[in-house]
Image (tube, rainbow, N blue to C red):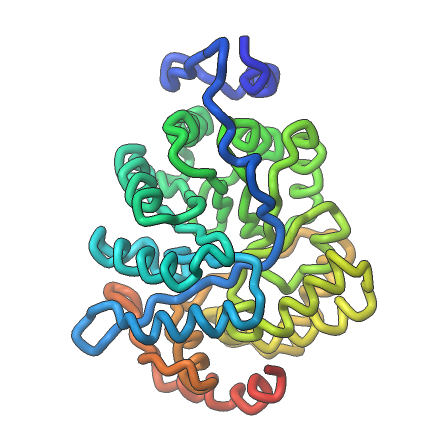
Length: 356
């Protein structure tokens, strides 16, 4: 029996007959091990023209801006990147532009959002053919879906051996909550490079890390607002919107925390990143209020509820104000920017400009 299947069986997480887990004497090549995935991956947004086409020039401007700030990778078509709403042709456009602009300087990770294994495989094939480096896969099945079905879904993707896979764990959006043992089972699958943790529960993540030391996956936070605390439990970076708006500050905080071990400087920089919080949250929040609550809860390793995210419209408006020209349009059926949100962005801009 293969060693990679053993932890799944020991945890009692492989259920039959719903999930047919193949047992091979020689597992497929583990494509995840060939690259270091640590670092900061900004959440790239998809700009749209007035007639609903991908705005290629605005996308290139955004990507070049991020690359100039030495980010470690690019996340495209994530949740804020509207990956759930684009069609196949639009996906191809975004991936092609991102890959050609990155020029192999940094890895390009493509978001996939589905519970249909055939759709996921087709999107993985497309991403590979267009030159992407990895995929970030969010299972979007019904809340209450048995974990063995989720495991079977990711197992089928891992067996394809197409691209390295990141698990996208976002329970507040999907309604699917897994134990550390269940997530460890996913991370033991061949070809799984790591996980994006869209939770603020450091004890849960610390347990995942402890259960996967034998395979050493990459753990990336879904926010840079807990960057130093995430580093202290053994995390490796973030895939986040903070790096989109404040790339220089986010990279400086990452380097201080993860590379230099300068906790004091890293925490000071991390606190400045809370300026981005009002652009992400749907419910109005002040940078100071968000900083007070999040820093305290993460320092104490208390679980913090993640509120509903806004659409990317506020982020697009902020980028436009910062000189990366794009329209604040989001793809229907998402809600467009409201007058109140326009005012919120306008009031925040002086502080964001000073923080660049």
